[in-house]
Image (cartoon, rainbow, N blue to C red; front, side, top):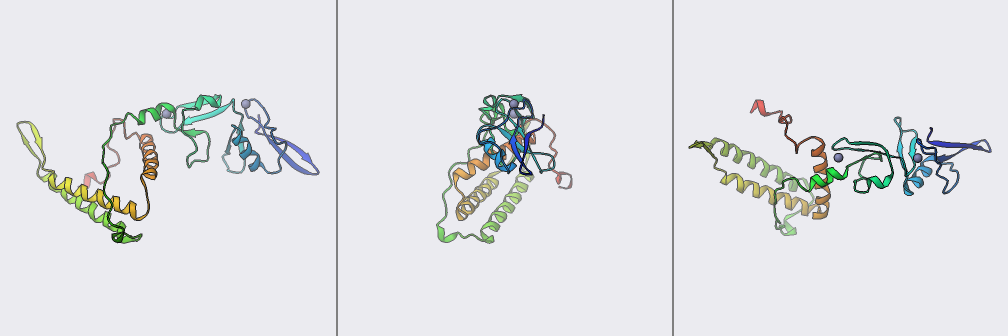
Length: 226
Ligand SMILES: [Zn+2]
Ligand SMILES: [Zn+2]
């Protein structure tokens, strides 16, 4: 089944979205001269429309025949009523409406072990500016974290089968890093709500990469040169 019903009027083609599974036509507003507008209106009414392989056309599905794939666990539902996907997360940067995060993966996100970093005080605005020096301060503190971590690694001793690490300076340097990160956020007006959204995006990205599952430590490319 094609995704468009086409009629010629006065020598020009006019379009109506048509479900590629069942052939149902989206006739809420009649025929359209502009396919993109037709697809947008259909999506507003619960249809699915996504750009085809060549980004030149749209494929359409009626609300009873949504096709969806979970981008984190790869679970694929070839066709189902849109209400089946109520608990899913959509409308992210991807303009392919068939891609989302499933309810099971979202539920799993809430069960992942987390580290509570607490609330950090913000420096007085007179110490902050939207410039590269504000950002370089973060780099400087990060470098100090690395030095402190190396010092901790050198301190490792095994006593009665227990591994002991002196990490006092490392903790202090991490605190400095978190403080400068907090200041950088404040300087650029980045707030907790934005970070919450970014946190979710970041978690989804890392779930896709399998970072919350047991596996090989494949991304530490510099490890062998250390
Ligand atoms: Zn259909
Ligand atoms: Zn999933």
